[in-house]
Length: 115
Length: 111
Image 1 (cartoon, chains in turn cyan, green):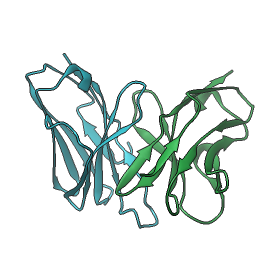
Image 2: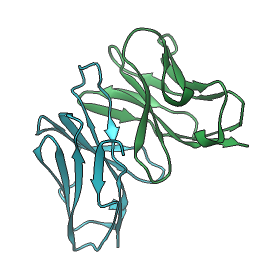
Image 3: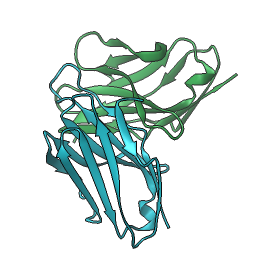
Image 4: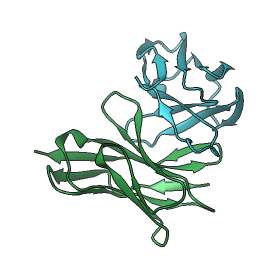
């Protein structure tokens, strides 16, 4: 375990379903991130939260909705997804960038399949 | 925007031979550069980073990387490859509030 836990590990959902991905860290980090990893594509940054406030949103479709209730938890709420949204969704956490220990710790990811 | 490029989709090397995985960067200002490794169905694991200081950075599992400002490169190296090093390797650069990753290089170490 890296200290960042993602649940569920695998998720199959229909296009009309609503589901949520969960990420939890107990490393004392104050920034959390969602990335999407699709086959043969670079990791795509989706959302950034720093001190529980969203600071970056890379033009992600509204069918993806993040939530960060506190510095230890991050959610990604999913609704009316498309088959092309099938991917590995990775959560990461870090200290602030200007600290000596800056760098990401990743979870193992949620493998999402949209049918 | 800051960016990194990994010019090789795949690198093949025989066990025991030295390996190099290439990364070049494009940044304004001083770069924060990272290498991560990903094993199948897992998240990315930190290998090493360059913030400032010595151009040769040593990291986990015997890996090291050399920061070369004149060539804008940050190549990952290991003197003697192991079959267990076979994985997907990502170079990354800090870009505003987050890391931007390269497209990844698959390293295959043959016994």
